[in-house]
Amino acid sequence: MQNFSPEIIDAVLRHMNTDHRDDNLVIVRANGAPDATDATMTALDSVGGVWAVRSGAEDSELKVEWPIPVAERADIRKAVVVLYRTACRQLGVEPRTD
Image: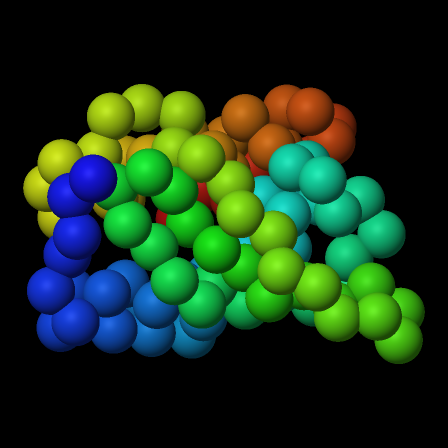
């Protein structure tokens, strides 16, 4: 298992939770939390990502494995994009284009 430095993890989490909050929600809804009302990415490693999920009044944690191999920082972005696009297809949601 590849562990990333705290700086890389912090940067990815900050980016996902600031710039891609809606994407987090799409990802968790398609990967085991269909009733989620909020999702925050809280951790990651070379195996997958972890999200704190709120569904109504319930809080839980959801671990999602990366759909592609992740060994370097650039791979994290690719894996999240694949997760997001796959989730959009599964949910019938039009992916953002920006």
